[in-house]
Length: 92
Picture 1 (cartoon, one colour):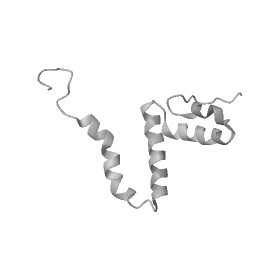
Picture 2 (picture 1 turned 90 degrees about the vertical axis):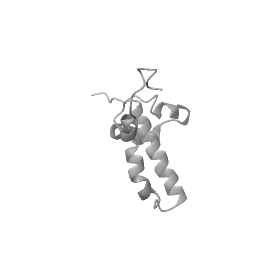
Picture 3 (picture 1 turned 135 degrees about the horizontal axis):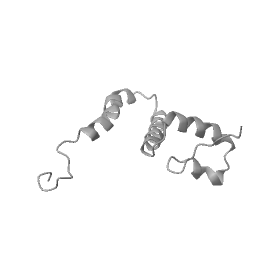
Picture 4 (picture 1 turned 135 degrees about the vertical axis):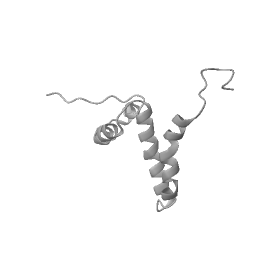
């Protein structure tokens, strides 16, 4: 396919580098402790990757979201999703 379309790369190194952390951690995740712990770990990893894909620093994103979560009204919880999140600035 790459011979007929110059836009197609010859290799998939970019993708390989993106999935490497998942492949390296796979064996460790077998021992999450329980099914629920594994599901929680998967949810957190999904949030982290979604934050990265949306151009956010995962640490800043999670710190802000976890700080705001207890006081966030339920009808506005969608504002904390990575694709809609904006860093809340506090007035000086």
